[in-house]
Length: 245
Ligand SMILES: [Zn+2]
Image (cartoon, rainbow, N blue to C red; front, top):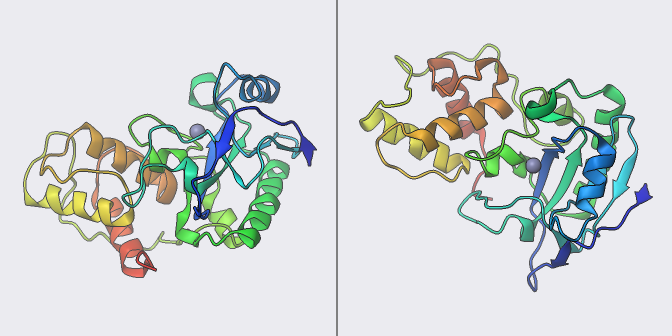
């Protein structure tokens, strides 16, 4: 662990426990550039940790403090995600600068780091999330190449192998659709944790939430269309979910 302390943090609210672990990619041309930005007082952004592509781990903010990584965000009805989370920035150029696979040595370092964090804080598996989950309209990270299944197998997060899952819906829903089927879909996304309004219209936010869900839980379906398979996967997660623990 390399200490590279950032000035960009403040205290967590009194008595606030950590119950979310949030994964990001840096989305910059290099890890050095990301580190420099997160340590610059002008930028006002940070994370607790950054993991380089070669597996080196940098600590920028102490876990007891609130790092500034989530921005405007929402999960399960809460909006101050920074207050209750630990943020890990994983070096990758991201969709803007050449999104690429995360090297094995980097993922191994993320797993080891995350397991340590989970041993120190009570974070349920279903609250190990991506930035795109809590800010679906603005963010795509850590993206569809992030190996959530591999992490889950190592005890980090929640990922079901649903390759055999059937299709629960008679047909897909997409941008512009309206009606009860859309309201029901929005209610299910909301029950899962996404910050979504029940409007009965498959609007831009619904599309963004659908895409965020696909990126994390069924990346092969990534389209923003709530196709029958995606709806089947969502139903399977809701069936098994310990959401109200
Ligand atoms: Zn992010």
